[in-house]
Every structure is written in C-alpha cells, then in structure tokens.
Length: 266
Ligand SMILES: [Zn+2]
Image (cartoon, rainbow, N blue to C red; front, side):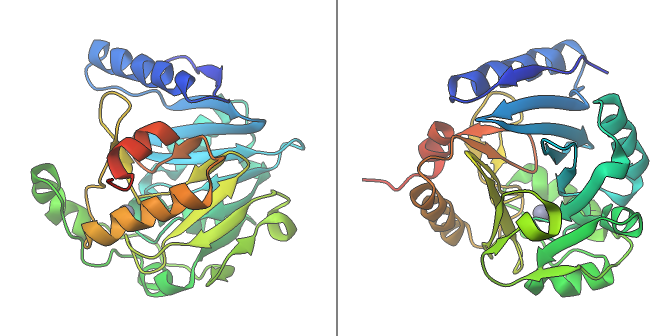
C-alpha cells in the first residue's frame, strides 16, 4: 500500500500533481494504484478508495459522518472497509451510499452497507438493475472494453431496493446530514445520477479519467456517445464554479480537463 496523499485541491493545478504522483507510483510498482487518497476541495473532505480500478469516494462531514459515492464490487466490501479504517475513518459511520448507477462495480457493495444501517440512494430508473443485481447491456467504446465485455457483462451482485429512488433533483441533507444535491443524468444507464457537493461533482461513469496522466476520456461503456458529450457540456454550463470532477475510474479531473475533452466545439 502506498502512503495516503493529502492535498488541497481548491484549484485545478493540484490535480495534475496528484495524477502525476499516481502515474509515477504505478509505473514504479507495476500497475499498483494507492488504495486511498485524501483530498480537500474548497472545504469538502473526500477520501477516494480504489479497488479493481474502481473508485469509491467517501465524503466526510465535520461530525465524522460518511456518505459514500458508489460501493464497488460486492467481493471488495471487506477490502473497502479495511481501507476506510486505514484512512482513519470508521465504517460504522457510513450513513448513506449514493449509487451513481446500478452497474456491478458501483452498486455491488450497497446491500452490505444497507444491512448495517446506511441509507441507499439510487436512480429510480435503475431499479431493475438493483433488484436483479446485474448490468444492463453494455456498449463498449474501445478495443480494451471489447476485450473485457464478456466478463464485465457477466458480473452479478446481491440485489437490493434503494431506500431513496431519485427521479428529480434531490437534497441529501435530511437523510444523511450532507449538504449535497443529487441530479438525474440518464445516459450511461437509465437511472444514472451525479452528486454535487460544494465545488466538487461526483459523476460515476458519465466520463472517466485517463489511465495515466490527467485527461478526461469517454467511458469504456457508453451506448450514445454524442448524447453523452451533450450531457457533460450541460453540467459544465450548469455548475461553472465546480472545480473538481470525481469519476468512477481513475481521475479526478479538473474542469479544464473536462472542457478540453467534452467542451462544445466553436
Ligand atoms: Zn458503469
């Protein structure tokens, strides 16, 4: 395990340093990524825990309560709880889990946290995926994804019913104590959500980070790439003060990086 990196990313420049750190570490350690990286973005404390190249973001409130954005693969729940503890966080203080969507690598661990008392928040339109614990038909966008398709499509997890089923913009304050809004952005799945907290947004698989470096990329699986670009552009316009985009895989990304890849062409 690599040491936890703590940094203040109130401006975009820090992200480049973070990602350079990750890249150098991975090159040095043959593909290894840190299990947890802590960042503070304009007062919002975020610990990103990574297993099987999938991020779970722990947003930590001033009172120690934790809201997770995504829950990783079901088989990684023990490792996720261990990583929370290693980050100085108490897994028992997870009061809420927001699922950006119902794919197995994001929703797989949700049932375990729900059984321990956390409120699970998910898009209403992903209810069939959560109920059955399986992915919808995936549309690969590159050769790597085509090579992984059979395995990713076959992933399963313990099904569940979300406690809060989001259909329109929803505040998390009452249910979790976190001053955040959840917005439905269908596209990657029908029930995909994004979460905005202060100057950060958590977008799941709306887009992804590059494997090395700090670029924004189209996600590995996206059925309508043109509509996806329009969705990203709409969020850039909606939240001009958001500096940091936390994604489901690699990242995080600066607003500048997202604009460079997805911004409207003149
Ligand atoms: Zn996904």
